[in-house]
Image (cartoon, rainbow, N blue to C red; front, side, top):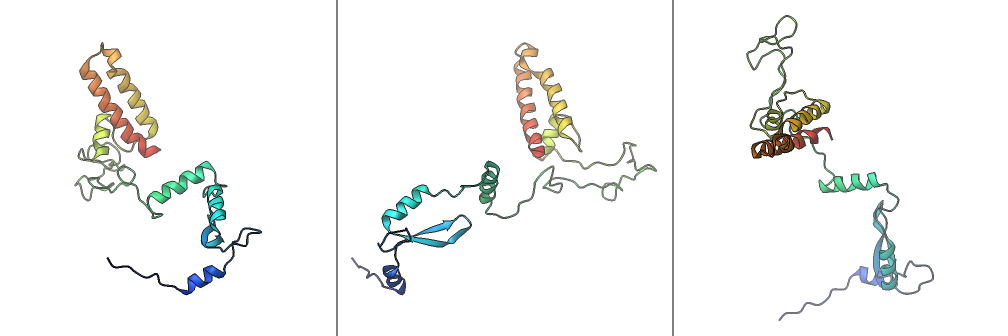
Length: 192
């Protein structure tokens, strides 16, 4: 078996000369500890006993509110990189169509008051049934643009209609209610 010899460097000599930063301690400062949350690359140098004491008392989130801690944790999940919404809020996600008030891409021509060829007002963006959002909108029988209030009202109406207690424990109504709950959860997330 081959053994490697430890290489000495200038940092070893520097560590041997450095004293512990704890007040009144004369032991060598061999262990580093960050000075604070905002200065993680500058260090205190402590002996083993004092670095243990420091680590037990140190709290990275000290002085931050609950909301600041939550924001910090969420940003840390994505590595502090910007993110963009997908789906209904993203508007141009996979399978989504864009707003075409003049009908250049759909072939519909607006009427004199900005109505589409069916006289139904401005053309609305559509979300095909292949997307999760499109399926959720179809399940609740809604068309964009939607508001949280409209989603809640439609959800309450459908729950009253399909609840198993209102249908004498009918299994079909129970399955329909499960689909309605899932669709409501998908759409509600866009307003959170």
